[in-house]
Each structure stands twice: as structure tokens, then as C-alpha cells.
Length: 218
Image (tube, rainbow, N blue to C red; front, top):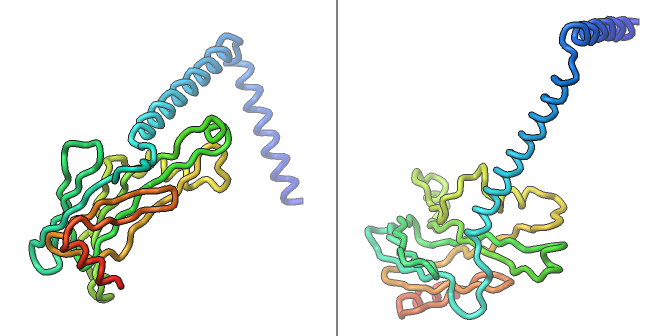
């Protein structure tokens, strides 16, 4: 009886509120204005979302087939501390990134088209995401007090298109993928070209220092 009584009381209050609203505030023109306001708000929100999506998409590039997507060179500043000079294909400016550790890592965000986009033949796209360092010693890696990775684009997390797509359990139009290079030895003067293919990333040594660094993986 308790819940039936509470339900009856709430229903009575609801009826009173509806009667008061109809008695003192109901006008057809008010309802039309309210609906119009909601409709315009939805249009504005849709325009903003499409605009942000367009801004994100223009940062991605089709997967190349012949040329590297970037070249990275390392200069030792101190023990286990390097400056990574990153030159991204198609960009004139280069980036200087501080690397801590014994190894370097790079990850790339990839968008794959599904459904209509795939049927139209739209190309898969990529964007360099993070470059960072890593210590071999577990204790150093666990206790490190500095950020070991640097973002390679300025998109904040809350509007990162790749992250939003990656959260979808069953993507219909876009699918998020990631290519990662991990545990690459860093060495003073080593220079690598980064090649990308539909299956992942490949580091290509461009000088003897890079060749020697790669040999340490074997």
C-alpha cells in the first residue's frame, strides 16, 4: 500500500501542475515559439558538430604508398636524455621534442572508412599522434616524474574525432585504428624515416648510428 499511496500522491500533484500550467500559461503561440527555439538550437548544435568534424578530418592525410610520413633524428643532451627533431612530410616546420629514456615510441591515429565511405572509395587517413621515450629499467619507468610522451597535434581530448570514433562499439561509417612503434633504441645522431602501410609503421635507418641502434633489437 505504501508505494501505491506514494504513486497516487505524485499523480495528484502532477495533475495539479498540469492544470495550473494550462490555466495560466497555455497559449498556442508560446508552444510554437518553444518548438522553434528547440529546432534552431538543434540546427546550431548540428552545425557546430559538423564544423568541428570537418576541422578534425582536414588534419588527416591519405596513407602514402611511396614516401615516408616523417623523419626523426636524435641528439643526446645528457645521459638518457635526447632531443628528437621531427620533420613531418608536407610540413616545412620541424618540431623539437625532449625524449627521456633508452628507447623511443611513436603512435599514429588511423581512420578507416566503412559502409558508404568504403563504397565510394574514400581513402584511409592517418595523423601522427604521440612521440615519446621509455626507460629499459622498470624502476626508472615506474618512478619517472616527467611526461615521457608529447602530442604531435593540438586537438584537445574532448573533441578528438579519433577518440570519439574509437568509443563506438559498432562503427557504421568510420573505424578507428592505431599504428604503434614501440621499444625502438635511441642513439645519438640516429636518424630514421617512418614509413606507413595499411598494416602498420616501419622504421627505416638513414645513417650508421640508426643502423647500429636497430641491430640492438636483434
